[in-house]
Each structure stands twice: as C-alpha cells, then as structure tokens.
Image (cartoon, rainbow, N blue to C red; front, side):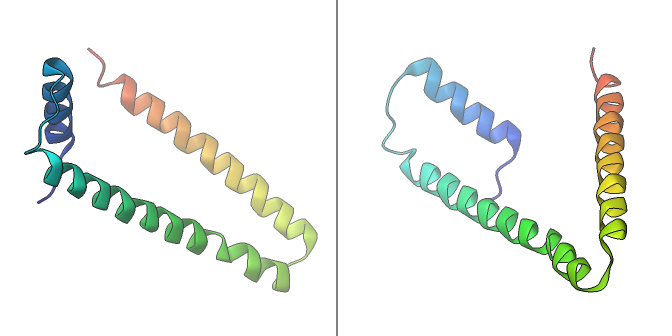
Length: 93
C-alpha cells in the first residue's frame, strides 16, 4: 500500500479530532514505521553516494580545484533554494 500525503493527513486529522486510540489503526502505524525506516535508509545511502566525490577529488585534484568545486556547489545550492522559493510563491493563493 502506498501512502500519499492526503492519506497521511486524513489519518492524522481523524486520530487527532477524536482523541481515541484505534486498535484497528495499529497495522497502518506499523506500515508507517516501516515506510519511515525505508526512507531513512534511502537518505543514508544517498548521502553516502553524494559524498564519494570528495574521496575521489582528494586523491586526484589540487586544493584550489577542490575549493573552486565547493564554491560552485554552494552557488548551485543557493540557486536551487531561490528557484524553489520562486516556484512555491506561484502556488500560493
């Protein structure tokens, strides 16, 4: 079963509004935990893969080239944040 944001919010609102512990909701909560663990492992693997470039650069490039890479990476991050803010602002009512 795949969970969408709408499904998660619907379950959270239902549980919060009634303030009742549902025994029938336990399997769904177990699925949420399993899904969260899967996403955590995926994020850990992504972080490991994205940092492999530093291991390779440290053995092949000079210090100036690594510094230039870090500056350009920061500029790319700033661009991505700016782009995200602009796209988000177009969706606000």
